[in-house]
Image 1: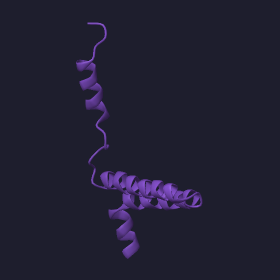
Image 2: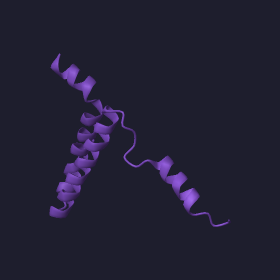
Image 3: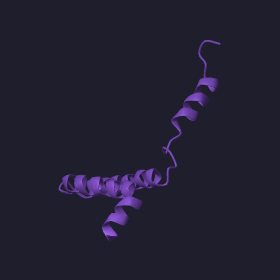
Length: 77
């Protein structure tokens, strides 16, 4: 019962952390700096999953960024 509630409320976070834990052993065998990269993967997976759980949208607002660049930088004025 607890696991089902946890899965329903934190699905994105769990998937993000699980994917990082799956990829981490590959990087851990190659040294310290790769372990730091593994920690970065874990942080990114958790953050993306958290945003998915809270329906906050993407980390980078690509649509607004594209529109801003289109109005700011127009090579053929």
